[in-house]
Length: 415
Ligand SMILES: [Zn+2]
Image (cartoon, rainbow, N blue to C red; front, side, top):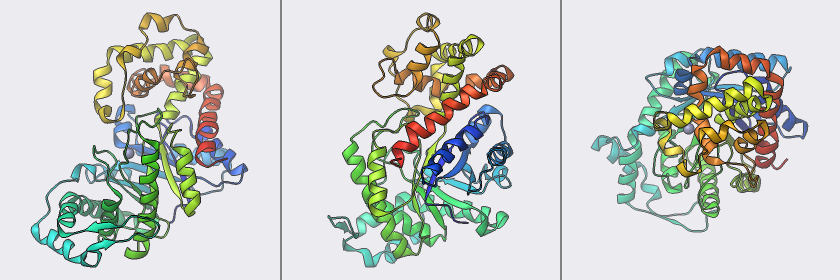
């Protein structure tokens, strides 16, 4: 099973926006750019919402049917491991093998020695076509890379084999992810990681490294855009070389996690994938949930009340809500408006403060990030929340579609 060149992860926490998300994909198709929708949802999201992997499949199938979509689409078991993959086997056909927490797990001396020996031909000066500066490879570096990543990729092999035995090798797409860590992987580390992936016979079609800079949830990239672009370009070239060198799937491409809202790096990504005629996968999820809150705020009445309630309760439960996302949010306390202040806001003011339009005077990234992690509060409201989504589905859906198409896809693919 081969995934198309361009693909977009469209997570949807509450499972009501499948059609609106697919409409954004269709809008892109109408301009001539085919993008494969991939509905992604992690085990963590399912557990907060009390949804099941089957629900994501049902949502995807229903959206595809309703809009008579004829293209390829997938359901991604996002960030799975051996402990939780079982529940995703029937409903998913895209699996993101998350081995970040195995990075640094020691491997046996025999395994490390064997890996170092197998890399002999790369010792000395390694030139990767397209990258101007050569990489110096010595045994110390190889031992370090093996010590850091060998066990993690071994684990990815175990998860892959487990899924393959259950589903059959040709019935799913495999991604290997290592993004939820503190230290970015360098392009040269990426090269040897890809060698390990090939040795484990994992036919990875997407790989999610940790990049330089901060990929905070639902807001723009924070970091040096030029440095990111350099690293991204080197990763693209490393992958191209590794595919040929190690016999990995020819369509292997980068996957960008926490990829929504990174407006300042989209033009660089667009430029580089065009330059080398490469594919890309970008995962977004929380940005759709935020549009639900924006849509409800715009609806006024009980919708606006709900939006305010989510924010105000979030204010009092910050520690609990932020803990699981500590590495991927950065909320400035002094920029969070008080509950009393928010109570005085009308629909437009609330929506403009939350909506991500760079340069909009009211836009407040701290409030946006707090609401981003506040989906647990909406989940606790149960039907009171989901009934509002149903009642205002047209308005909310419009927000979701506009956000994905106008603010994301147009920038990402130069539409
Ligand atoms: Zn991720």
